[in-house]
Length: 396
Image 1: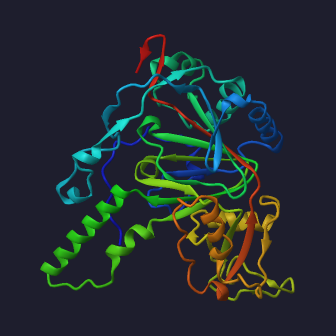
Image 2: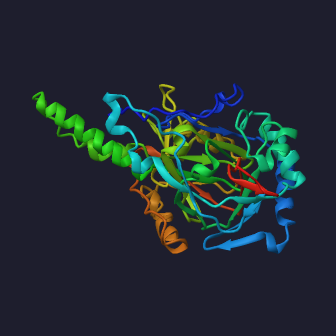
């Protein structure tokens, strides 16, 4: 069932250079993935800069460690309650989908004390992101306005996360402090980034379905398909992010969805076909077709969730250079047909608070090629414009 979404005063129009990289099949259509945004040599340069940071720059958390550049927490301040930027007046027809007064108000975190970004971020990486106009038209706080004015379209804050194999991050939102755009460059290894509707969106979906069913019953129609229970689950999905790529989250994918990374050492990708699966052309019965005889693109799941950028992933698996160590699971393997078996136990052990993996799609063993993608150490550079920065009494 297709639902209307809350009317929103969205981010500035995205530049044409970014539009061709929109990830298909997402519920909101505001997720972008740019492969090979940097070269392998540039990746090594950035990883070297991260490694060269002093030990005092690292903050060690359970399941990962991080660096923060461009701003650090200022003295504790009373939280400021502000309207969520995507909330707006509703039409009568869509009133049940609109955030209520409680949802429109949420506290903002204390401001950060601004500090200059290092050259490898303020110059090199900012220039690369500016090529795609990621932050064009987004205003910066007064404390960093001069730096942003000198480099139009640049960011003022970067969060560096390091994930060892088996580490992940729990479902979360980036929140209003960095709205409306977050742009992340992925280094060192791939990631499977999971998306799911926020609790507020799930509630609105339930309210909308309840109202729709009531209306149909009043009209004498029957509706026993259980769609009201399945709509939120139908909006769950993931993208497979290769190293040296850029992914950008904005619009409703920013405000209406949370994201997470499973704490596993190996990701399992199932590539599905809609026709004969044995590839007779190369004589290898253990490898299966990635497209059908009809030429239709294959679909895929990763760790049991639909892959929204399936066509890209299939191409990368064929190339063999994007995911080092990726291997096809033989049909007689004990785990064939059970893609979550190689990840569920590791996820539970690595970070117990991670949401449990959903069950795999049905008939996996019969109609899919299973790939195992072992992880290596991954570093993500999450770039954004922090809205609450202070410096020398300047605050916004």
